[in-house]
Structures are given as C-alpha cells and as structure tokens.
Image (cartoon, rainbow over all chains, first blue to last red):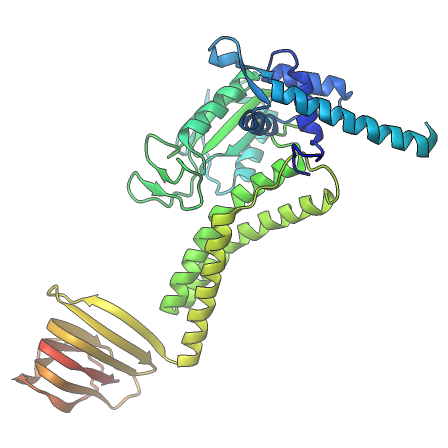
Length: 105
Length: 337
C-alpha cells in the first residue's frame, strides 16, 4: 500500500514511527517503542528504519530535532505529520467500529 | 589476533563466513582488500550482516553508517571483490545520482558495509518489511542485469558464442535475486508491504532496449549465415579503412571503401586444401600487393596499379602473409584457403 495523503491507508511501519515521534527520539528509541508497543510483533530492521525515516522526512511528516550531535540524531513529528496521524487514526476507528459490529467483539 | 584471506563474489557467502568465524569465537576488528583481521572473543557473542551500498553516493553511505553506529552497531567499510572498473574510476549506469561515477572519494572500494552487533538471540535482519526486502533485492539484482546485457550485446554483435555464454552466466545471479523478489511479492500479496516497492525505471528501459538489440543482432546474424562484421579498422600503419568482412569455412571476403595505407593479413591454410587463392579487386584508386611465406620468401610482388587478379599459392602447410598498400582505393579482396 502506498502512503497517501488523500484517504489512503498508511503502512503500519509509518504509523508507528509517527506515533513514536510525538516525543523526540533517536533511532534506537524508535525501534524500542515499536517493538514494545506491538509486543514484539513488529520489529524494525535498521535498514528499514533508515529508509522509512528518510521517506518521512522527505514527506515533511518528521524533522530532525535538537542538537547537531550526529551520533545520536533525534527526530520529532511535524504538524503535517500530526495531521496525517489523526486522519489515519480516524480511519482505523471507523474500520474497527465496522468490524466490531459484524464480528461482535 | 588472526588474519585470514577470503574471497567471495556474493555478499551472502561473505556473511555466512563471518558468522561462522563469530560462532568459533573470532570477532572482526579490521578489513582489508582481501584479508580480514580477527581477535578472539566469546564464541557466538557477535553476529554479522552485510549491506551492499555500491549504487549509492558516498554521502548516503556515510550517513547510513553513522545511523547504524548510533544504534550501537560496529560498522566496517569493505570493497567488493568483483571490480569492473578501469583505473580508479568506475562507472555504474544503474546507480543513483551521486553513485554513478565512483572514484576514490566515493564508494569505490567501500561498496559494502559489514555490520556487527552483539548477539541477542534474535535474527540479525536489516530489512524487515516486504517492500524493503524487494527494493534491496532489486538493488542487488540490477548490476548483474546490466553487465549481462552488455556482454550479450557484445556477444551478439561479434557473434561470439563464448561472450554470449559469459553473458548468460552473469544472468544467473540476477535470476536468483528475481526469484527472491517474486517470492516476497507472492507472500505479501494483498497485504501491507510496509512501504512502497520502487520501480527501477532506468534499468527497465535499458534492459528492454538491450533485449531488442540483442534479439535483432542475433536474428540478423543467423539469417545472414556467415560471420559478418562492420568495422572501422585501424591498420598497422594507422590508416582507417571501413570494411565489411564475412568469414565462413575457408573463405574470407572483404569489401572496403576509401582504403588508404597498409593492411597486412595472415592466412593459415586448412590442412586438406590444395591451394590458397588470393583474389584482388580494385574498382577505383590503386593498390600494390606482396605475398610472402611466413619464412620471408616472396611469392608474388605486384606494383601499384588497379589490380584485378586471382593469385594462387600451393598449400605447403606454411602460413602466408599478404601485404597490401592502398591509395584511395575502393574494392575488395578474397581469400580462399
């Protein structure tokens, strides 16, 4: 699935990274957040994370944060990123509500 | 401290070897062109991964290395052992911007990153989403496709079975990666691939054009029967001569336009032929010709004029050498041997 601003779904990886960056984090902390939040189900490889951070930066949904210290470069979500996250959240709520009605959870 | 030499054309083999060494209790501390330096450590304490970055710019590689180090990994630069470069500059048509011309300031001799982490029991994977895996396999596949295509093009042009065979050989790793890509696509069909699968557009265009050219050349060769060449030859005395040459069993036919200067051809007669026939045909301009044996004995000497003649030399098993000097000539020559 492509990450699409107009009504498309975000990938799980993208969504979790955006959530993790509501507070500033460096790479390792992002990996930990995602792993803990999903109970070990979603594990981000370093290569995948590097690519995702580049893409999200290009899209303007995250940006570098804090000091110029290269060793522990931190990122934080942008306003555009927060908007896209909220949109995605609403989409997921609608999705789970529909599912709950049908499946009966 | 242990030094070992290792050569592998594929990153998979190198990765396996490093992990085997780590399993025995050897930790990598330095990399050279062919040799690796290890120090002793607890067996199984470390695990290794290898990432190909030869198609990326140096800026990307450096940034990626720093990112990996920020995660607590140890990262080494490593050269690939398959060097298809001329001098210190390598041209990579399949690479991204900044990676296309690789020099000592770029990823030359740093095409690989060897990444070490402490073994935590989990498999060491750098690419964990299907989209990312597919994209990485494509990056590994494309160089093999390009090299193979270039070799096949050359082989089709020269109509050389050897070059064609090597071209096909280089296609095999590409097919292996393509199979991996296919597997990933199938497994993740209809699901969230974790990203966008990138299309290698320049490579696709290049491969399509190459395939058409290769097919065209091969069909042309097969249809035209003989081995057939269009060449602009640099004769021994530095003259340029445009000629068309066909070679079939025991015959060479050459037609040329505007020949100037000297050209020398050596004829090795076939064992069962009685004689060698040299036919010279000058339509305009003039030429002179001397035919000698390999030993230096002069068999024929024709002064400069418009030669239209067939000269016969009995086959003594010895090679004969035909020396021709042209002056703005147009015509052809034929050898039957």
